[in-house]
Structures are given as structure tokens and as C-alpha cells.
Length: 124
Image (cartoon, rainbow, N blue to C red; front, side):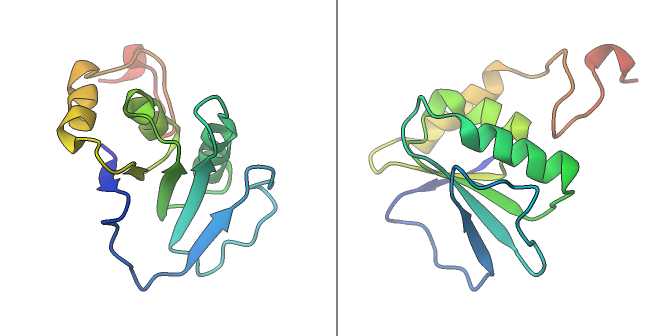
């Protein structure tokens, strides 16, 4: 599940953070020493960060925190997790319990994803 944070209450970590622009190619950025990558959703209709997260996890093998920022909607959190995000910053006033309920609604998926690569039929 994704770690849920609320904007304005996000702790400042002493990490090496890479903020990746939406038009940047995640296959070409240097990742040496990077602890967290922040991917922005400038508006909910812009899904480029989903692709960037998946490429970072599956093709680059990045194991650190991938954080969703910007216009993060609660109903997108499950898909964010499936594409490789590990944390998300919700706007102030959003209830983290609402976000957690999204994960309870969908216990398993037939297709493989960035987290569980095998499809449901191939799992034992």
C-alpha cells in the first residue's frame, strides 16, 4: 500500500530527492545516490507520471521511494501503487481513511503490475 501524506504536514527528510519533470525521460536520468523520486501530477488528466513510475521500477530497477505530488486524487491511489508509487501527498483537507478504503475495495488483480509481476492465474 502507498504511504499517505497530507500537504503541509509532510516531514522534511534528509534524503537525496530527485524531482522529475513530466517531460523527462526516466530511462535517461542518473539515479546514483537517489533515495526518493517525486513525480508530479499537474492535473488529474495528466497521467505521464504513471508511465514514469512504471519505467523507473521495471526497467531501471529503482527500489527507493517514488512519491506522487500535485493533483493527487484518492481514486487514483490504487493505480499509483500498481505502477510503482510508494507514497503520495494528498491535498490539505483530504481524509487518509478515505484513501485507505480504496485499497480495501480491491484485494487482488488479475493482471500483473509493477508490484506483483505475475498474473493471478500464475500465482500459487
